Structures are given as structure tokens and as C-alpha cells.
Image (cartoon, rainbow, N blue to C red; front, side):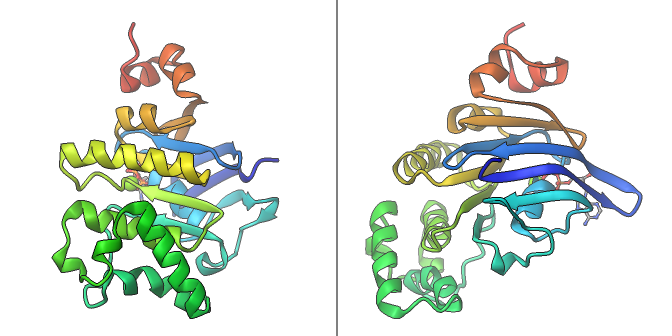
Length: 238
Ligand code: ADP
Ligand code: MG
């Protein structure tokens, strides 16, 4: 048993099966990247972990507890999307605090966590601003802060950097990696960018056509691709 267990998980929309029997066991503290071309089923699998999509068959469990039928709000999971979805009329502090308020966390504790996360993400000087007064990279940090203060069991990212320009993308990649090393959070991270997958992950699941083609460490995947698709997609030397 892992920390997050995906067991024979499938997803169909009517007669269209978009995820075939998928088994992935994620250890606590792992940084798992789901990588593959557009439409291969990455977001579907991530949304099933978050509980935003029902599972058609199989099971997803956290700490041995089945999440099937458990509402998103009752899963201790936080998600960062590529669109930051910050509340425009709330300050940065308000945005970070909101989810904690919803979960009944008392004000002194909320304040403590906001300060810690703001310090960690270097946004302490932005707490009184509104999202409209921030750059793209700053908004992305706020979105991460909002997820982090929840102290989730699992942290989910869906292409969080794809709206940023190339320079900022590389900076944020470094930042996310540092954050993981510092906090040891369990992360499942979706991207279509193989470089991002290779540099960020402890393990990679390469997906294509609703199947996991290969699951392994960056080195295993790059050096010993399981098939032509993986070799081509990951840019392994032939
Ligand atoms: P990715 O995130 O890898 O780009 P998705 O998980 O979003 O891929 O989509 C996987 C497949 O499922 C795609 O073929 C997509 O068109 C299909 N799909 C996603 N959501 C729905 C839906 N609500 N109804 C029907 N098909 C869907
Ligand atoms: Mg997607």
C-alpha cells in the first residue's frame, strides 16, 4: 500500500473510454509527474484524484481509505490550475485565507499559516494587494499559497506554468522544486512538457491514449524507454 493508491482506475464518458485500467502507487513525499500529449487523459486522472470527476471503475485511496464517493471538500487535497481563479475583489491575504475560513480554522491559526506561506513564497509584501495589481508569476505564487495553507495530504497541479512566459516558467519550476524539497509534500503534477517532467519529478508516468505507457524514475524513462512512443515523446537518444 502506498500513500495514494490508484487501483485499476478507469474513466468513460458514455461509450468513450478515456482512461484505461490504471495502477499507480504514490509514496508519501513523492513528486509524481503525469506527462503526455494533449488529450491523453492527464487532467481526467488528476480530477478523479481530486474528486472533481467520478471514477467509472476501480478505486483511488489515500492512506488506505477509499476516496470513491468522497466529495472534493472532504478529501484533504489541494489543487492548483493553470488559470489561477483568484477572487478579484479580495486581497491576496483574503484569497489565501478563504479556504481556511470555509474549513473553520480559527483566525489566529489562519494568520499564522498565511504569514508562514507568504514568507515561503516571498509574497509577504503583496498581502494587501488585489489580484489585478499582480504580475502573472505573483498570481501563480498566491494560487500556490492558497493551496499550501490547507496543509493538504496531496498537492495536485494541472499545467500550472503553461500560461507563463518562458523565463518565468523556468523560475517557477525551480521554485516548485525547492518547495517540494523543503516541505516534502506529496505532489501529483500534470504537464505536457517533457523537460518539466524530467527536472521536477521523483517518478514519471508517461501517458498516451488513456494508458500509462511507462512508470519510472526520470533516469529509467529517459535511458530505457519502454516503447517507441515514450522514446519519441521524452526525446531519448536512439
Ligand atoms: P489531457 O489533460 O491529457 O489533455 P483530458 O484528461 O482533458 O486530457 O482528456 C482526455 C480525453 O477525454 C480527451 O479525449 C477529451 O476529449 C475527453 N474528455 C474530457 N472531458 C470530457 C467530457 N466531459 N466529456 C467527454 N469527453 C471528455
Ligand atoms: Mg489537461
